[in-house]
Image (tube, rainbow, N blue to C red):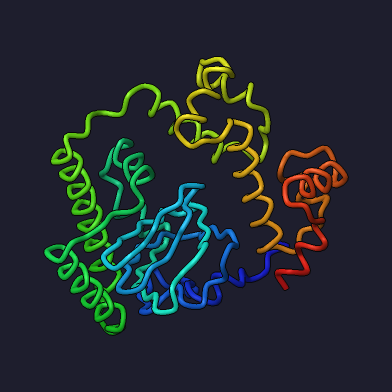
Length: 287
């Protein structure tokens, strides 16, 4: 299958074979910095102490005590920095548990989770969340309980609803209005790039899908994220390439085929232009 263990996942978060969920405390302490990771399962974690800087699909978030993070399956993350005392509790859950917990939710709910992966808790909500993790750990360790997975799934579903309600109320209290057309367009562009950057590298294709001109799309992304559409595509495409280099034994030609390049020469030139180093040099740094 050309796949080898992801060193990042092995070091701090993994979902053992046959398990629907796992609770770890602490987590992320030994994570490698500045290496992109895409987990094949969902993760919720809570910062208990210390600080960290985490990028989720190119958006950077600053974590501190009380920060709650939801990573849906297949989200790309990069841990850029963390303090020596950084400590986070983690609940990881399979895609099956995720699907079962969310089967009654509609599409706007998933879009909402994708747009709001991070939430900050104050004391009145932080303590109950810490208790939730302690209860989940007890359930995880109670392997004789015949309803163990069902209990975890129901609590996860409840957590999704609590999370959704909390963020929505925060927005209402802050008198935030429905996103305007430009904000919505930028989000749709990021979602499209995340889904298609392996095969579509040109700004024109995304502008056509969004029914706007390339000039208008450029104005929107520069204002929102201070990047051109091409820079957004390149950064997300480079994440895809680095993940393949980090987590598989695929040849350069196989990676070129998987990421829409004509051949390995084109990919190698692109990689050097983006990073300043060759693919072989990069691979030596991750082994």
